[in-house]
Length: 147
Image (cartoon, rainbow, N blue to C red; front, side, top):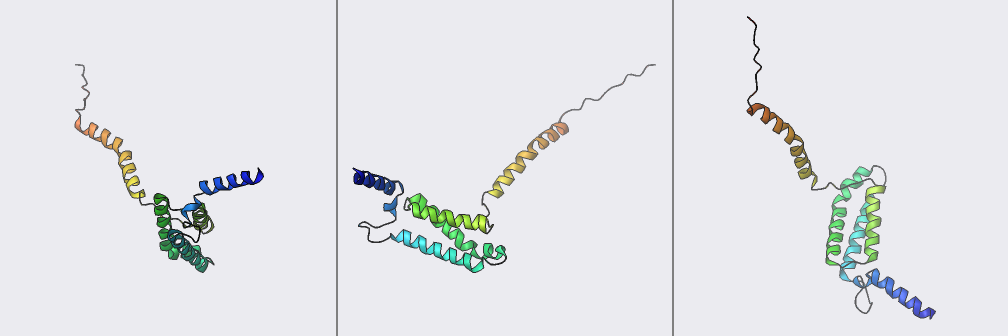
């Protein structure tokens, strides 16, 4: 009964971890996608090692292209469902190194439109009240003088 229980638990872990996505049928080797991803990870980590001493701004600048490529590859693999828990783990470690250890960040592409829309919304009430003031007839006070 113990062997059966262990087998079921291992099978459950294998399934939930999507391990079959990383190995070929027959378990002879890793899939081409996994091998390509791991080589990309090695390139990124080699770049990190090369520039980790001293000023991290050099690391952020010189490794940005490699790190961005790794992020894009990870995103495609996530969309295509061709990754397992090992790839997720390696990517988490790499992202932690990039952001926490080396204090680097990638600028978000959507920041410019967000700032533009926010600025427009901020000035909308000002424009409304200004145009309302300019286009409305102002009531002028008429003073009646005693004679």
